[in-house]
Structures are given as C-alpha cells and as structure tokens.
Image 1 (tube, helix red, strand yellow):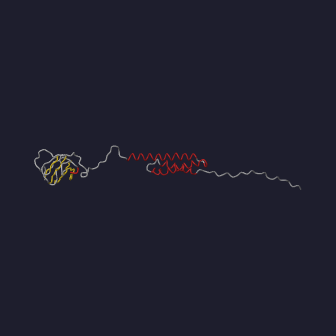
Image 2: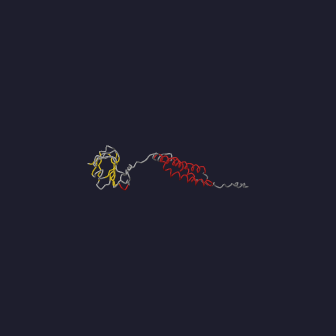
Image 3: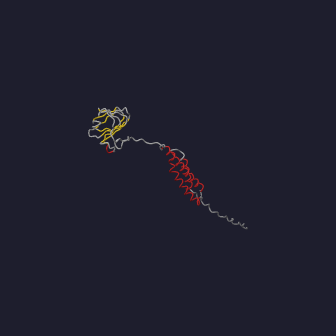
Length: 213
C-alpha cells in the first residue's frame, strides 16, 4: 500500500513584539500642578498657596518641554508653562491690591504731642521786658515778659484757664536763648505755677490772666 505524502507546513513570518510606548510624565505632572495653582489663585486668601504651587508647576512644565523631543508631550508642557505664569500673575495682582487697600491715604499725617521740656516753645520769644504799666508786682499779668523782683514778685501764680491754652516759662535771663529756660509748660484750664526768687524773669503767652495767690 502506497503512503500518501503530506507536504510540510508553510513558513510563518516572525513579527517582533511592539516596543512599549514611552510617556512624558514630567510634562503631565507639570500641567496638572500648574492648573491647580492657576485655579487656586482665583480664590481670595486661599490663593496664597499658589505662590508655592505655581512655581513648582512652571518648573516641571519647563523640564517636560525639554524632554518633549524624546518623549513627546510638548502640548502639555506649553500649557503648563502658560498656566503657571498666569497663576503667578494673578497672585501678584492680589498682592498689589491688598497693599493699596492697607496703605494710608495721600495727605494724611500723624499727630504727635508737643514736648514742653525738650524743645523751644512755638511762640515767638520776647527779648525785652514789657514796658506797659502794671497795677502791682503780684498781678494780674497777661502775655509778656516780666523781671522777677522788679516787675513780678516770687510766689505761686494761678489762672482760671478762661483764656484757653496758654504757655509759661521761667527764665534765668531775657536773652531769648533756649538755654535760658529753667522750666516751661503749656496749660489748659485752671492751673498754677511757682516763681522762685532766684529766677531772672517769667514769660507768659496766650490769653490767660495770672494772679499771685
């Protein structure tokens, strides 16, 4: 009996397995981080975290853009760079607006109380004694400079404060120099001051009337 010939199977072509596709994870991460930073920058107060998130997303997107030639993802990298820059710009605008809202308005000035003993008084000094006729060396006295012992006697003087804010100073002499001031004060309302026999002169300023007690 003759055996039937069976031909061998045809040769099958060989196909190598496909290479795994490489992805640009840095570009993807930079885009996601930059997107979160840009969205958070629009929220008042909470957007302060964008000062940290946006720069991170911007740096990752730039690194991803460099690797885009080999791994792809150029579009995500560019979008991440743009979103990171927008987020930082919004944060900067918030900062400028907050600074403008908290800064003092133009033309405002702070008030500081005057120092009575560390600086010269604001009233103009009189270097010569008053020449008007006075009823007594014990007063009443108004604005002027009076020599102690000649035009004004030592003692305690009082004013009822009806003249408003007034100034007085005890002097060693009538030279008008700042060093000649022994002591001084600005008073409002009923007040007293004491003149020593060793004082050279006394000067009153303002509309108050002083009388020896």
